[in-house]
Image 1 (cartoon, one colour):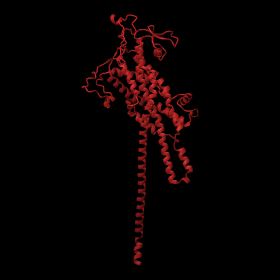
Image 2 (tube, rainbow, N blue to C red):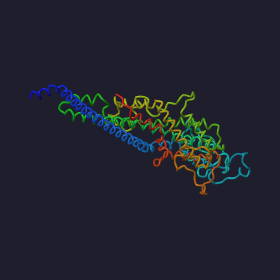
Image 3 (cartoon, one colour):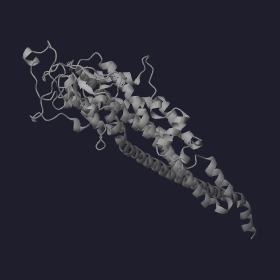
Image 4 (spheres, rainbow, N blue to C red):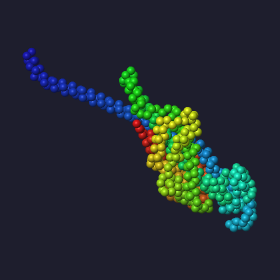
Amino acid sequence: MEYLGSIVQRSRRPITVLASVLGGGYLAVSYLRSKLDEMQDSLTRTRACTENLRRRFEQNQQDCSFTVLALIPTLGKQVIHAMNVERLVELLSHTKLRQTKPNPSLPSTDQQQTTDNPIISNGTGDPNHATDGQSPDSSIHLNGASDSNSTLTVDHTPLPQDFSELLVRPDGTTIQKRSEIWREMMIVSFSRLFTCLYGLTLLTLQTHVQLGLLGRDSYLSSILSSERVDYEESEGASHDDDHQLDLSSGQGPDPLGNVTERRYLTFSYWYLHQGWMVLSRRTRNAVTDVLSSRSLKDLVSASDLQEIFDLIRKGVELEPDGTEFNFAPILLPTSAADELQTLQQGGMSLEECEVDERLRALLDETQDFIDCPDFRLVLSSAMGRIVDLSVSNIARSASLDVGDRCYPTICASSRFSQLDSSDESQPPPSSAARLVEMLPVISKESLEILKVIPNDYLETICETVELKEFSSVIYTTFEK
């Protein structure tokens, strides 16, 4: 016994050290294992949150496209009514009268000839070659110019009364000559095209901002709800009344109520019924300035058409002093009175026509995104893509040779690939065409922009990289 006791006495320190080492190792391994489990759980939850955010964002982008498609008819009906190129074509067909004075540009035999053939064929024609025997400068006037109900006449021959509004330009001046109808048709054709181009782009950007903000708040609400459930499960519902209040009210925005959401979305009514008219006047002014030096007889190539489009864009997007034009008043009302009027005209009840604190925060944040440089970058990039698409479509329809220039939309999609040379029904491409011959093509292209399904223009805008990046910034910008 004394021997065993002496052995134990001598081994006490090593045994103590060994036990300490083993115990410490066990505790360290347990600690590391718990930390690894926590890290793995955290990574799993992070991946789940990231996937949830990605899925919600992609769904939000699809919702934006569907919303724009639903709103296009509302915008399109007003644009077509206000810029009715087709009615101007009808007006031309009603002004075919016997020429009342010599026209030195025509042979004498033609000056005495009258025909019932229409002045245009499939929307084309030449205002400087009056095959119907009428001078392009034949006068058009109203009997009693001060009376809005006066009888419309051409060389004292009555015209249908419903054409009277077509002879009054937006600036209030009256069309007096038949050649002026042709120039008006050129101005309106280009103006409608660019109103549609900008109209669709701005509608898409506005929708992405609105639905992006609403989608972001919905995502935040779901995260807060999930955290609250986890907290209740871990702490027990009987001990967390005060903590729940703090979690729901102090850590993020409250879930948007249906009324606030509907109020906010109602503000698209302003752009669809008021703002677009400001846009249309601006595009017409830019078109008028660019085309003032152009004749309907001018030969225009694909590169010339691109130059014209670029100049019009410059006139729309820049002020005369070179500063950028502010599109914000086109997209949102600028006064409290206009805000309330927008809510009322947009279908909200009198009780709901109120800009509360949450709605004001949304409108202010929307204004901030519209005013930021990124918005202008997205607008410029999207317009560049769809203008290229428009030029390529018009050039193809007018059988123009695009030369060595490769438009991005042509190269990216087989839909715009060159036709097989074996297709004899397609005329060979020409280097240029008269501007007057391109008017029906331009007018038709504006209607393509307003088409709901399929809409290549909307798809082109939504595929713009800058728009996707801008939308992701909106969706992931969280504020206290």
